[in-house]
Image 1: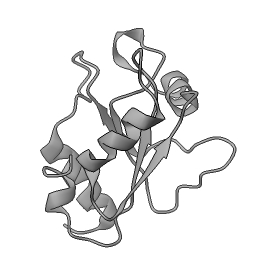
Image 2 (image 1 turned 90 degrees about the vertical axis):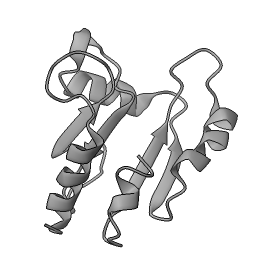
Image 3 (image 1 turned 60 degrees about the vertical axis):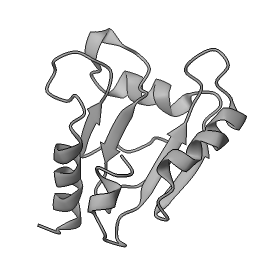
Length: 122
């Protein structure tokens, strides 16, 4: 994502929020902190969701492939006016790396296009 999406969009209007959450045995804040270098873009802010709250919420709110109920390895695009309150907002568009053939499987070029459209760069 760093190279194929963020590296191709120079706009300072873009904000990136990376949520690290435990998904596999041994996942923890320390491993997440070490992984932050994978997305070192200055527009990125990293968070640790140790209880997996966001993954559970979006797992219920979105139709994930394979009847999954936990969202991880997902990429959300929000409009600039999205409001984060008690409940997180629904993404305007999203993609995932969870398998299946639902038409939402991650394509970095399409994701970059989605972001450019939201930023009105095209």
